Image (tube, rainbow, N blue to C red; front, top):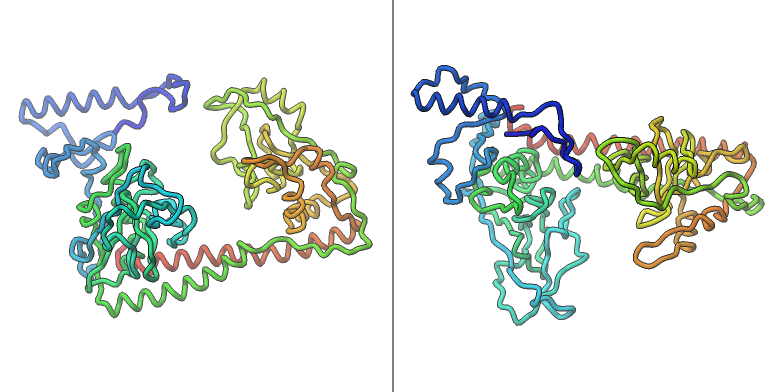
Length: 460
């Protein structure tokens, strides 16, 4: 497996000082020599270089697809505690393929409702009934291609690695079909559908799929690939005990999620407080609106997508050259303690405080400097409040991609009590946020407990 061909993966494909290719050539020549001389003493089969594997021709030809991706033929050996037999899914369930249709079959109304990969919520394993396709009722569809209670809805083909193999559990019969890149897993009496669903959401199943279908442009989950996955199979009574525990854990996790997802700082605004425009109490700027040339390395270039609910994120960033950064920095000199606020797109109004010493430039982002007249954390919490969100919606402009203008940001009305009151409000909100963070930790703990209920069947 060649991880490094001697060039960077960026668009410029810059030459690197290292490469796997010379070592690969040496190993291939050694192997050819060993075959010709029928002497394999020089090859250590336990420690092959460059993540290599040696596969018998019969394994490559057995399915008729002659796939030469090495990952498919790696044998993943999971240790098993031996208490319960490992059983292949071929003995436990059936995979039903979805409805195939063309673009011409799609209609605007009065059609069969069809669910696709985007209707599966990856985090929760539930079905999202937004953005459902409608297809003509002139098509003859099989009732088997409807989703029923206890079905496991699964994505069976996709060009995107994040979609393939993702699942949702169907709680009750619904009048929806599923598309051709989707499937329904239907269990027999040996396994509880909820128990199998929990196994399919685990890391072992993801690794099983990745090893088998790695490298293909369109990743296709053939029935034989699904059926080859094995799980430890306890009796139905034990399966139910495990599910009962998981259900309790899920309820606790759900309650904690409600707190985390719905919490917003609330500031009880008093009528006697002065209302001032933001631009009159502090300096308000915005980042560049230009799109410079990007490079594989250099100065980080952050946009509105890097302002998240959890703060400033340096994930998925582009880089610019220092000369461009210096030009942008003269316009918006970002420093620790500044507030950044998104000015465009779905997350406009999302704000965070700069707490990272890295040097970077910004685009489509507002910049609010600290001021002696206002506690910066008080301002940040107000910008996150429901009142501020309502004002942002009110002053936003544009069509498909709404935005807040710099003028609107500078005119943003801010309630301004005495600094002592601001400090007290910040202290109260910090206490509340400690409770929110405790709920985040509770979510993490119970996600781990849910995984452990399945992992206990295996020996880690």
